[in-house]
Image 1 (spheres, rainbow, N blue to C red):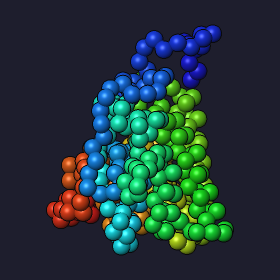
Image 2: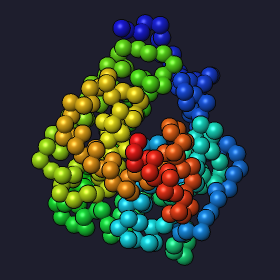
Image 3: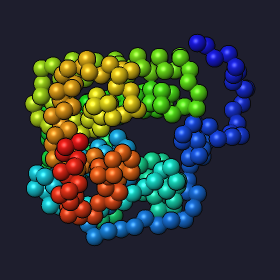
Length: 289
């Protein structure tokens, strides 16, 4: 159905909140709105994030690094409540001028190093610890290609389909159809590539999988936007196999919990400062969910 009620003005002006569920945090200007320093814990790696798909990418990698024995990857994960505007505090803006989660500050050197954008954080950490990113040649190119595929594709899934299907204050056929079609095309891309390889970039588990799974894996599980039936995700058999295998990894289970503030309380760990924060009771409940 065509929406004929709106004609764009000659010059756009910001005169009211818009954006449905996230209207209160949308604005056309950058920079801080208030002075708030970021907390700093005892580990060199300080993560400021929220358990959205983009945040989960980083916590999965950090937990996988720890699972693989990289003790230097221990970290503090501080909760940034984007619905309350925490990302516009002066400390967070200093860590990420774009005011989006996640942001990482590495205090292991002589001077703190800030890293923002989830893909950049994945590459930074993978190179820092020499893990989950091939070092050279075709394997590295393939991994980075799929990592950047995710970075370029997910906005069509999240800001496109997810917004208009789940969050927009009004439902219109055109944007939902447009982005549902593109989301299903992306699911088909993944399903086809996973038909003859164990992981997205080849035989080895890499940061490409860790970047893609929080978006497309959680969508395939029916945990994203409640859109599993609408998009018929069960039909992507290869994607489902990969999705469910990764979902059983202990580090993935832990990574999904960190900075999470929705769903079953047993699946939430608002802040993570030590491995003991994942208590046995919570892990058992999560594993059986």
